[in-house]
Length: 488
Image 1 (cartoon, rainbow, N blue to C red):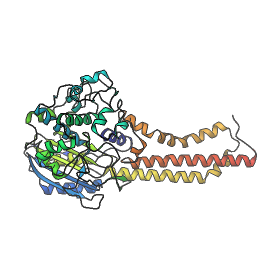
Image 2: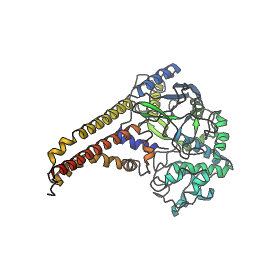
Image 3: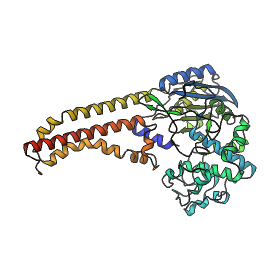
Image 4: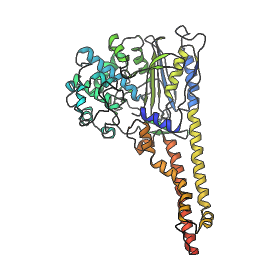
């Protein structure tokens, strides 16, 4: 799952598109109800503005579904509908929290008890790990961190039990309960705890305890149960169907849920006054931020541009994006799912736009920032390659003027051409630094940040090509004249 990773790469190459809302006179709880026609009109505009391949949405109010629909097409060429399966990425965390809370209500899990005492096999090397509680896992204050956990080693675990066993020896970045660090390991440990407490596979328990009570018949934690089409990555505005990057997805408590807009509507009814798998006290515990940060249990409070106080969560994989939220004041809830993962997430701004509409506000569209960024990156890449080709073509003339000059002067003139290659070589490391220390691989850089990656590669190639052509021409000219550059 790539939530922090997405933010970092977007900051490096493109500003995310945003929604600004101008409050209307009728804003607030007294606004006219949000109609299916208004939702359709807004989403059709959003799809046109963003260029996303496919989007599905759910809108609920006061425990009832207002509208579910799909727009655009899937990678299989079929129209996206409210029943099209989508990967919902980190929205899965709220489902994991709900599953844990059902066991808390049954007395099978102690929310404020130590995880080590409830989960055999959980034994990180840091002695402070004995103080990690279940609540710490769910509000991301356990001390587990991408900077101290070998995330790459965890990704190919074949089961949650193996995943937890690979945490042996892991250090904590902070004492439990003192600092929030968004780390997917927290929710995968919580999912394994569900297995230990229930005696069932995590996906089976979530289906029985969460999906089935809500009528979510087309949701699962494995694409073997609910086949899901490939998502997409953008290549300068052209959407490429791509399988999701390999990783620990099936039964993942941090990001494994597959769902549909219709099922997400049923899910959101539980958070807006409808029947829920747990009682009101448990729901309120899920929404309560920790003492260390605003993050709650799979939800976060968010002040929308128009001033509304929402409970939200976004989700980002390498080929799918999603966002969900609800407004406690108006009783509205929203889910936006997309089968395209561009450099900057578009589902969250669309969700905020729907929230603005529900309050009688007039939101701007999500905007065309992604299209503009893709066009700018394409132009920059083409320009770099053009300049590189021109530099190589003029290398003979360049070498003729510099034959016999001091070596240090030639080196100074050549060094700037090597700078793009040096920057490209350090590209994953730079993104890792911006991603709070999460390990970033070259493989990841060729998914959603593909346009930025290729543009940087073009600049590096152009610089290296020009430098190589010039130096080869300089060497040939020196040999033909019997001269070499002087050392000083």
